[in-house]
Amino acid sequence: MTQDTWSIGELAAGTGVSVKTLRYYSDSGLLPVAGRSTGGHRRFGPQAWERIRLIRRLRALDMPIATITQLVSGERSFDDVVSRELETVQERLTELRWRQATLESLDDCPGEERLRRLDILARVQHLPQARRSLTDHWYRALAATMPRRRLDIMIAMLCPDPPPDPGPATVLAYAELHLLIGTTDFTRWPQDHDEEMRDAPAFYAEIDEAAALTSVAMAQGLPPCAGAAVNAFVSAHARARRESDTPAFRAHLHALVSRSSGFDPRLERYWSLVGTVTGGRVLDMTAAHQWLTAGLSLSLTASPEPGPGPGPGPEPEPPKGDGGRLPRTRC
Image 1: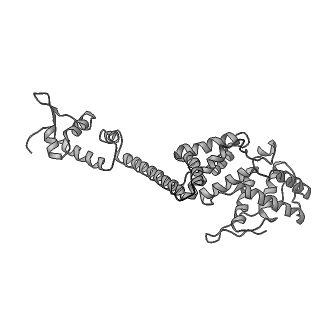
Image 2: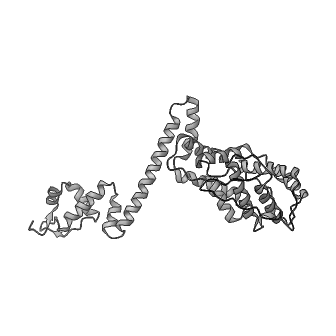
Image 3: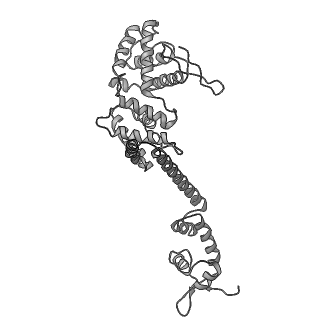
């Protein structure tokens, strides 16, 4: 080619792109006009050929015209565009997998059950909004009873992200979480400690230790027992109240926690569903509370020796791993 400029018809003939599309690219700023003919028609310079090839390649990847415009104008880098488009594709894949699992859940089940499932599954088809519904509920329910750091931890446990590759049972479980929080007078978090204890700085750290030890014991299938987990649990409560770990204190604590062991069945169901959604990666707090309550009851019959000063004496050793396996918990 020896000429300096080309008409829109010549570009269309040389590239296989229709005149209408090229005119749209030009109007969008993607194809700069080099000048006008004496008749007022657009003329395009040599860079138009390469620009058209670039646009066609990007459009072959379904990249939006607005994004291509930002790229060629220098408003966004190529790395940024590719990274964001990859995120978009991954989000779409998650939505498609979620839709597939939803349809599988509705497939081959009795008519009445299908209608029930359809009713609850319709609540969670917009995934970001669905998770916000969970977090909004639990922030309202728990904000007045917990320090901010503890609140964030509990929200993360109570409001799992939608799984990226769910099965039918997982989709149903995630949908039922939303059904539960929408029921009338759905329970708030049970409190077995008073205002003074909530403010104790060491309380939640020791409760976390008790929860970790309980989680290990439950994962190993151990029955409730008077051991390290119960000791850490008692220590948290005793130190927060500036009490000593005595048989009398344990009996008093057992009476307190026993009153909160009768959880609303909906809350027990909620934690069970969280376990289904997360594949068991989140500790079932109602089951853990019941395990500790039973272990505390057993510790009363064992009559442990009180430790010196506030708390139960020596701190229980944290569980240690063994070659990637769960550590054994002694009772």
